[in-house]
Length: 430
Image 1 (cartoon, one colour):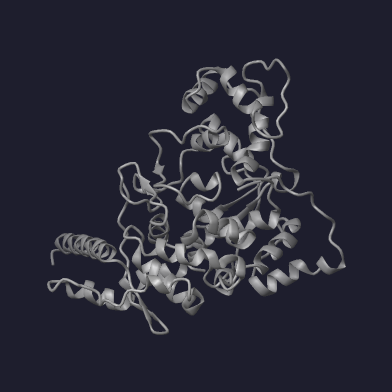
Image 2: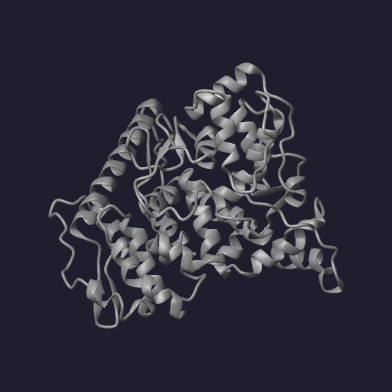
């Protein structure tokens, strides 16, 4: 069950606007030339980032930052570089699935600390760092995958691109686990990815999760794909009262071409997932989309035109001829009843006349139909949201169903906050 965070109406709107603007095989480190020798001083001066813990990250990080729009680059300011040997759980992983996912990590962003962790694999490539698993750990892993036995796992791993295994592979052989770690990232990302692009993925986490309003941003983003939690509520990044990603076993399932499976923390609602890793959870969906809007916006538009429009604001010029075909379907998807209308209209407003003429037919001249008994606080919030956007002589607005859902959600949150405040007052004896 997701927790309810108290937040002001103005913060709610700022979150929507802020939404507008992992791992693959690492490329070998290259000795810096004269042009790059000043990189560390440059990043410290321009972005308050000290790369002294791992100077080799400087040039790819500078290249990544240079491709960001001003607003998203500002989010990366004062990023803390941390040098680790291994991935997030190192040798303290709770199970085999988590250990595999950890060893496959080329870099990771630590939520709440604004830290970019650089690991050995960032430059040397991922590899399995442990020996054979215990029989119990292997059995738990196979059961989590839904595979009958070791032979079924070996067959799945043999089918991965670029994997060659001996004819006979003893049960629990590290060769199989190493193949998953080495080739899994490329499978999930759709190929080998350059290090600056991987860093853009990690910076996408900073954009989405940078402060206490992360749950609001995650929920708004999740509405684009229909991500829900296991209780069918919209995903907001919080599971069981704490911020949580998907279970690690899901990553192995996706690598091996298996279904995401039942009993997961998150459920994607439908199409619009640009890569295999985007299907992991809504946070990775955002990070992968953020990577692609800078690396291959056409691919993102083909998979999810609404996500292209959301993340292109302030980052990518939609007037590029290759992107024009995504404007009408993107705006149509944004105006769908299930999409957060504040995010949708903030996106339309951000792009303005760049959406015309393709989106002109989606204009709606009707005024918003609001209930007469609307609570004054909610009415004021709707006014602040400015859900009607005028571009030239055309007016765009959310659907009636989207407005009704938004009002119902805000009314519930207002009532929850009011009840919470009454409880506090009672405890204080007021």
